[in-house]
Image 1: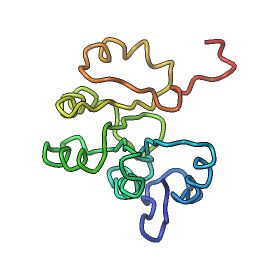
Image 2: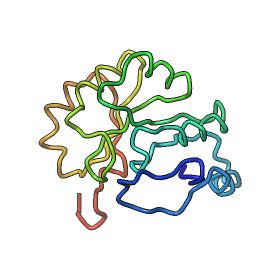
Image 3: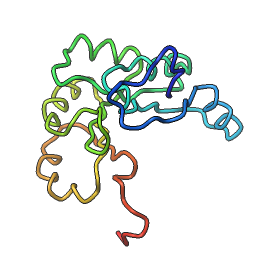
Length: 156
């Protein structure tokens, strides 16, 4: 969820200026569809400030989980607190400014594995072949965010 910007302003380094996407708007769209569960993914323009994401998860209750962004030196106590708040994954990416980069892939995987979390990778699918040796060594599940940027006209 993005905003409300009075409580959750975007980082000054954000490279996009999206419209607010409050939880109420999300609910008005999904409730008529019968959606019962949600995964709220930390947007890059909030970087390590997971407050808006965790606030949305807390409001939705047991029906929601979070994918957060953490600093490379995140400690076990902070991960445990995030787990209690509903986090179940960490987002790493190379697509937009403000996120946690893939140079931290292995260390973050090792830190979240004891919690049973996954890594959510926002990368371009063309990077996957070069990353495969590293990805195969990870002891956590992987999710490819935004369908790994696969272009519909790519034929792949």
